[in-house]
Amino acid sequence: MVSAQKIFSINTESDFNAATLEVFKYQAQHCSVYHDYMQMLGINQGKIKSLNEIPFLPVEFFKTHAVLSDQKKPEVIFESSGTTGTSVSRHYIADTEIYTQSFMRCFEMFYGDVRDFCILALLPSYLERENSSLVFMTNHLIRASRHSQSGFYLSEHEQLLHTLQKLNKEAKKNILLGVSYALLDFAEQFPAKLSNTIIMETGGMKGRRQEITRQELHDTLCSAFSLKTIHSEYGMTELLSQAYSQGNGIFHCPAWMKILLRNPDDPFDVSENRQSGNINIIDLANIYSCSFIATQDIGRITGENSFEVLGRTDSSDLRGCNLLVSEM
Image (cartoon, rainbow, N blue to C red; front, side, top):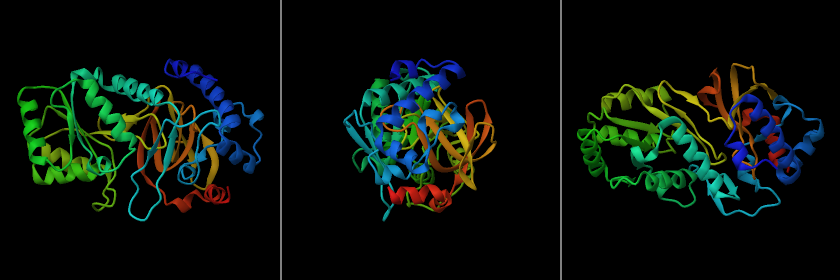
């Protein structure tokens, strides 16, 4: 079985391909949900020789099954936020240290040493429930920053503004990480010049506000806070890695994560060369669950290990995949 150390040491495409096939073989044998899914598809795991041949598990399985290696027990179960009346995804995590290594290495890859930043978090809907992977990550970043003013905020918008203005006046590097609707609420109530702040949105209106495009969100926040760009974090409960955009909505993946696109009309037609389509993700940090996830997002490839999210499909658009979710 490939080790976490090997995954986080990937430097080349050859390294990635070799580690991916090794992870696939392990999960095909030891993740019963993934194993059974392939059996229902009539796939012979022994014949899989390349990335394009690997089957991707529809993300909906995390709502209906415990996706976990039969050799492991969960240390924690992360749950998605969901919206009223919807079921939530559950990610059974066998080793939280792998998750911590993944998000810390990823942050350092794109932003440098977290100790150089004050980390402020505006994640009210996530803090109000337990077992959020985003809160787990952000809490660790806050503590690792060792900054006395790093912390979470619920509805203390005035206090948050005061802290941000103080940090900007002192020219201290800081990141305000927030869910989209909370950032919009803050922008409407307390617009201010925050030219030394990195504002990073994590997406999601969570049923709190009308859905808008990412570009509209960024334009509103840039105008309210006198910024040229808004950063974004692309992650989800079902993944243990994140992609980051440092402006213009273009996300970049760490070396152990890869985006492939599938044909909207055929969920089993997946290619590294397709320029646009539905997003499939290889996340090798998901060693003990499933590293091959077919999401509901629509995107396009913009360059080497970079992509743009264009929107989401209705779950019915997964067609044949969804039927298998209900049958298993």
